[in-house]
Image 1 (cartoon, helix red, strand yellow):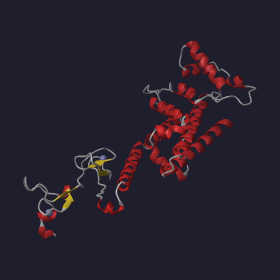
Image 2 (image 1 turned 90 degrees about the vertical axis):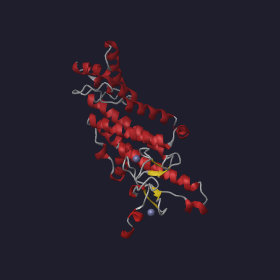
Image 3 (image 1 turned 135 degrees about the horizontal axis):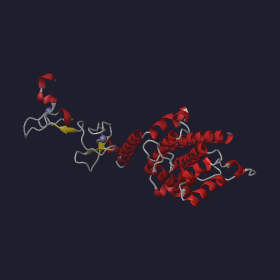
Image 4 (image 1 turned 180 degrees about the horizontal axis):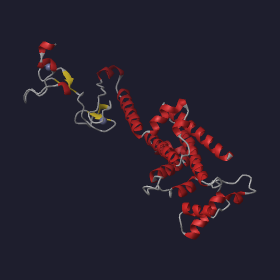
Length: 304
Ligand SMILES: [Zn+2]
Ligand SMILES: [Zn+2]
């Protein structure tokens, strides 16, 4: 029982620490991504071990796990089925590690090899997504090559993967009733957690990051004297409803949404064919083929 409690509180501590580092990384300290990954991978490892403990308290120890593995290969059944067989025979896992003071524990891939066989009793679908497993493997790879990771991956790729891992970890914890990340996460980290755990919120946050980066790049590339001539607008996207339409040279309208790539917005300004003043295109009236865009002022001068 003692080990169980330690694993849980260590998992929560590591998870919170990962969120703290993620926030510093987002605020510009790019090196903090690597610590985010280290802490997050530790949290994931511990939560996976908590899952093993729901099967049997001692299954986190390699020697006990080996017994399951031996049964699986002897009977040519999957690891979970092998465990359930041993359990039904009241196999004494405790005795396997008796007398060992500090037995080795299993590694992440061992846990996943068992967990991936867990199926929903109703639908028959597996609980553990292959994508989650792939992301964990990606993370292990990046962790091992952590010194080089900035060369190989963009910050955005790293952020998106961290988001998917947090989402995957949240689902895994829920499905096996291990812990509620939402409840355990510290108050000061809650906002950052909310964004990461929600796929939509995270993509939206990414869209806003793209806007900041595009704007910075544009101003950086323009001499201070000329910056006043930059036409920078952020418009409401007609398609996704976010204020994420920004100038884009490749777009036919001159604007593109960083969230959904749509190029249309009623707020994009066009020049009035009568008075030549710019207005939002959604406010324009069509008179005839020569007066395609007529502004409200020219349509109804008395009202102004
Ligand atoms: Zn959009
Ligand atoms: Zn006009």
